[in-house]
Length: 219
Image (cartoon, rainbow, N blue to C red):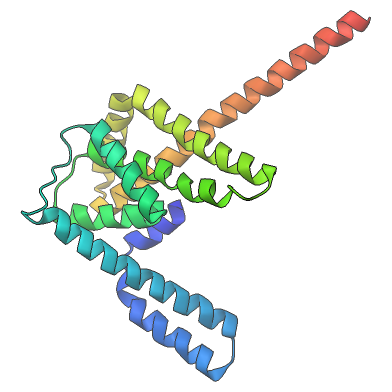
């Protein structure tokens, strides 16, 4: 999803019509149908994403729909969870956030809160898909949820520190708003991997200690 967010930040969505035309050409000729389906699907995806993004950004900025972000990071976090749960895609949600940042200035803290919420909101897709699936699928969906939730809780605990350090990094490299969101999305997932790697190492250590205790008792 981090790679998807980065690709979207490159603004290749403006070439959606080109992708659709090339995809249709392959499908009409009956050659390389799989490639045609991929190109056509990508084109339609970017078309829909651009339409939804433009509409929502215009709606948020309109005087009849007055929403102000940045007053409370927890509220921004909950809004992001709710919105991403509806569209069921963190990449799409962050694309809309990227477009919104191009017309409205948001702080690094606000963008971080939105990224955290988008990652949790996207887990609803796996949860819904696992309802009538196997036990293993339910476990995978649950782990995906707890992975993102634990990462978000960790960031909230050290929010000021993480926000400050990421801001310094962003300012040093002069990231644009779109690249900032991509970077924060990458940091979120990297922290999640780091946290759960520690949990896994502690769990393995505990198993090893318990195993040694059993061996000593047998001796």
